[in-house]
Image (cartoon, rainbow, N blue to C red; front, side, top):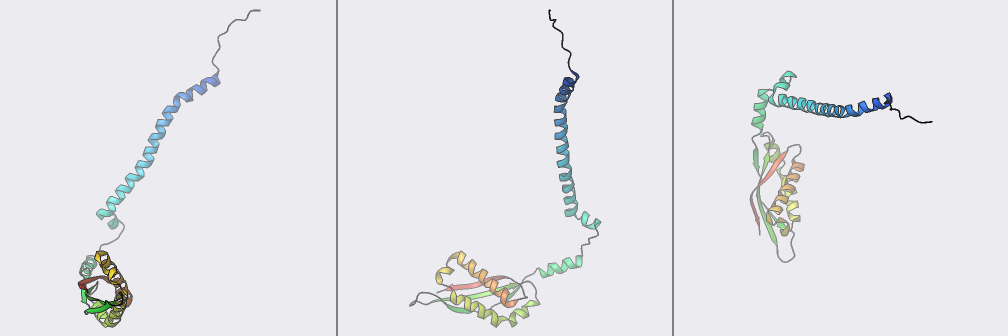
Length: 179
């Protein structure tokens, strides 16, 4: 018997496998486009919303009003008020035999004019806290700008504790002498 070579017909199942293989790149390209759209649209919406908010349009649309009188009052309260502290002289904790002294003139910066009287009433407590802290300091702790900065931060913290609820925003040195 002789076997005759027959031409093999393509199987329909094989053809269906071939079609998606050709269509797959198109689906991937479509997937990338969808991904770009899914990312770009929210970013664009956030950008538009931020622009509307910072331009002042969105707060007006949401019913948030800007009170100009309150803004003027806030501008007035932004002017700092300074309260002078009495001169302070204290001996520093140094090695025995050679005494070291510090002379300090300072001003407190507070945010409200009404608080100036409260600061003056609490001045003895404030001086006591400052003097006690200064007597604990060693001369080497006050050397350089870093030492002055640490002293300022410590005095600021103590002033806020002594004068609470008055808020002291800064301690300004007008004279600082270590001898």
